[in-house]
Length: 353
Ligand code: MRU
Image (cartoon, rainbow, N blue to C red; front, side, top):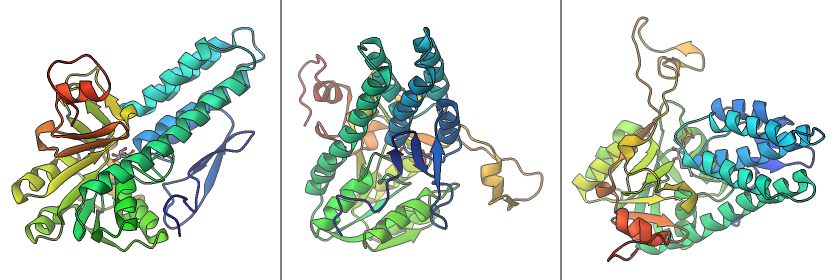
């Protein structure tokens, strides 16, 4: 099987609506949900029907098309769409791709001539296609960093389910595997939603890439045993100084990497960079219900009366990141000046490499 094509399409415009693969049901059940209005799509993003930073941005872009379809016969249709954009933007707070994609749609709307649905659909399709293309570029660049015979641990799900297709960190795993470089691929389960066990393992098994699952608390032991040379993750937001906001647990992986001499590679498209925010301490970290930890599949698993703290992202300090791989280039030891150079912002005395 080719690693460039998925056997499934997690986000698909069907002509009259938007079809999403319900990621909450995987791997047991492959169920698609169909949407014809924007507000239910916001609910689907909030409830993790679709998740992963680029995927929720792409989904929201198509939801704006649904909004335009619904409102276009009204004189004040743009006000209706703007209100839906606000609802979509509030669905999840941490991944910058969501507001980035909505900003692209807002800009498109402000420059519209002719049928808004045609123009907005073209813009949503562009965002989707460019994400897939960026993932392939990052896959190749990230794979170039890996030595033949290396092994890698990946975390959360950063594959075709989390993006427009192919994946960020999982795209690097796919490209490196296709190039014959990777000896072993490990995936962390990723409590409490098990994106690693349910989704990453599902994608890799479909691609016939052997995957070994570990519990999240086995990662440091895996490194100590010398079983991996790389930890490869995605990001939900990268701030101006290179801090990486990603799935809760990423920062403890990065700390362990530094201790054991394992290299930390973060793979994220330029749409995940947020140079308007100085550092990770200023990013809103999504808190989800305690029930996600205290229950499993609706069944209580913790002692009755126990409380839970459930932030679903954390901040990995830039100083713990060895490589940031983007479609615009690879940045070793990212910092403010290198990121500014990468995106072409005026900066003094530094190159992106
Ligand atoms: O809560 P989730 O499943 O949306 O979290 C997803 C992650 O943290 C991913 O690692 C991140 O979005 C990068 S995906 C390409």
